[in-house]
Image (cartoon, rainbow, N blue to C red; front, side):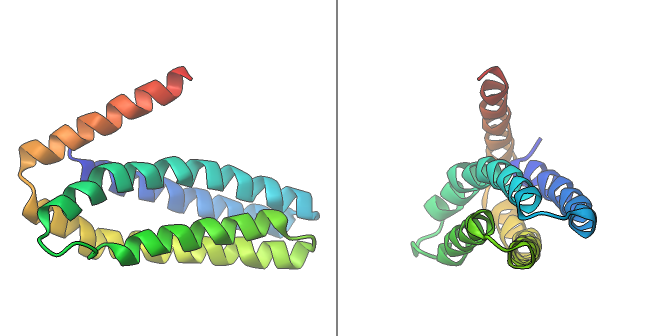
Length: 148
């Protein structure tokens, strides 16, 4: 399977999780509950972001003559990480909920940009064989994560 297809599927899973978290936030009563939700998403998104950066972005960056064209995406990853970290540090329930919601909105926007702009570019620049090799690398990486 091509790396761009795998990452798009992961985005769909994250969107479904965000929907569930938004529902859970309506039932949450404590800042601790919000922190747990944020911590869970941080861990999952961290692995996803590493896969994107180490496989898809790195391959695209290598193919582009002008380095730094992916700065927006790297910056957005850092900003999303920061927003989720701020959620975990918040001491007030409403502030933590607001930050978590904001992080999820930012993540959704980021996913949309990748799917509409970046992934088609990757698909145009790289050959199917390369995309599938990157998909295989993703599968190997995730197989080793399951063993840890």
